[in-house]
Image (cartoon, rainbow, N blue to C red):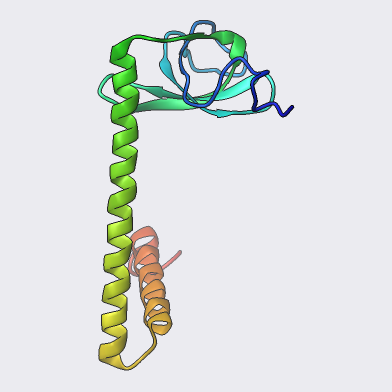
Length: 141
């Protein structure tokens, strides 16, 4: 049986509170509430901590014996709000990528080049602008 099956105490998605300071964490995390984002190597689980309203608070690997179950509806709602925000961000990113692809195809057609060529030119210009932002107009010193 793999470590990600029933023999483990926590499963992905379980709501938990950190009740003991994990020996691997320098930040004080006792009292943080979140959900098990991933079951890691024994005895650690990746905890995505939350704030009320669904905002992300932080995350990290926590030994499973430092956790207790949370059933408070307020925290379950915070997890649902967080997940909805992630879904919304993924959808916005998908729409943005479609918009960029359509624009690149239109520019490529207008200038008689392939979309791959137009995209390569775009990347070079973007990298050049990033260099100017990072190093100033005269370049690295």
